[in-house]
Length: 148
Image (tube, rainbow, N blue to C red):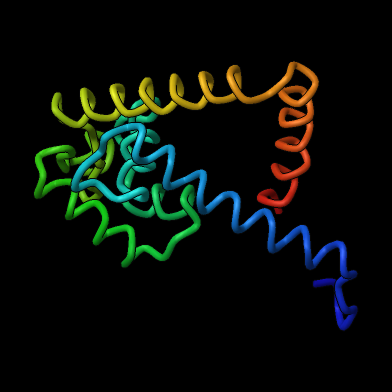
């Protein structure tokens, strides 16, 4: 909130609706990926590593908006599943970089494709072109909320 101002009723309702819909959408997207045994946070980390192979746990925590300790737990779980490995940074041997294994890359790319295909098919089947354009516009509004 801004200072001591009470949010408007429309802001409260929008907040409730966005949280409810995003929660349900996350569950449906995750189910579409068929990612058994992999949490949504782990899927997100795998997706980040597709394009940024070799990030530190601190880097991942900052990107995901998590505490370092929480991200360390996520990374440890992925390492236990053989999805990521820790490597010494060639430029600074004190730092450990997190990188996808071949299995982690296969899982991340397959999940990304399955999620994208499911959501595109649902948008095509259940929405008009005008509604899809509204979704695109709404995403830019929501995107502003996640940037400081």
